[in-house]
Length: 277
Image (cartoon, rainbow, N blue to C red; front, side, top):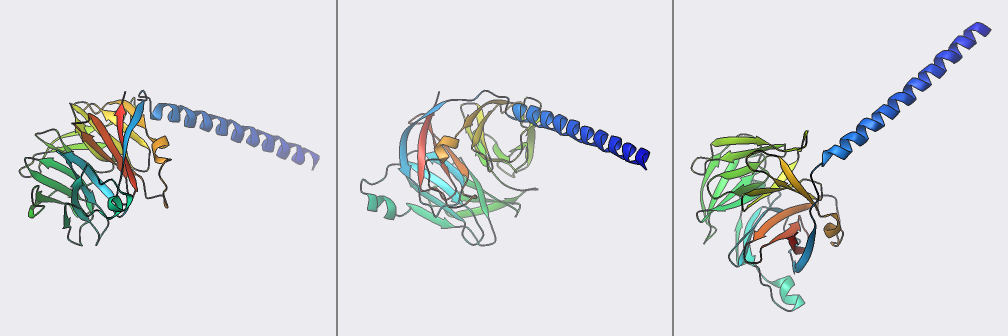
């Protein structure tokens, strides 16, 4: 019996040491992955202006054209395509109550997603419906739809192609005339693929993408998919009073006049104009 207890004790100690070693190794692997998850250098920025943003908008796509914002708001039975001026009224009440310049209701079976403007046409992705909706920029009137495979998340353009994300680490280039795929990229930061890519913006030969449920925006080489740098906007989000976990950062709009990015999120009450250094 004594020998049996001794053997049991030895096996128990050995097992405990093995578990401890495995935990240590697991921790080292986890820390190593975390350190490499965002290997790209972090960019600095400054807030140069703020503006109210209607919290009814579940922001999906967001862009600037001239003196106007164009924005898609998601959710089934609630999706919208809207436009409103960058300059807002002086009084608090006027800011809160100001109507949209134009508003187009998206059919209830669609969950509106990313938005791009090309050749005076507004292209609106849908989440699970595999349908691209096309609207006239001046009137917001519906013109036609095109189909595609997979999900629709973010959308932008380089002036020739429409560029789509689908929540994975892939970026798809589409022909505007029929939305056929012409090129696919995989976004990587070091050796790590970066998934959950969402809202997109293409500016001066660089692709910018935010990560869903993350405060980071990535600066991406549109030819290789390599992450060139990252922008951490956690401090910006902390300035906004939010009610739930789905009110995530999800709006990137380049303002060419001010040479800066407007940043907002789903149902955020404000937006920020930031200049990246």
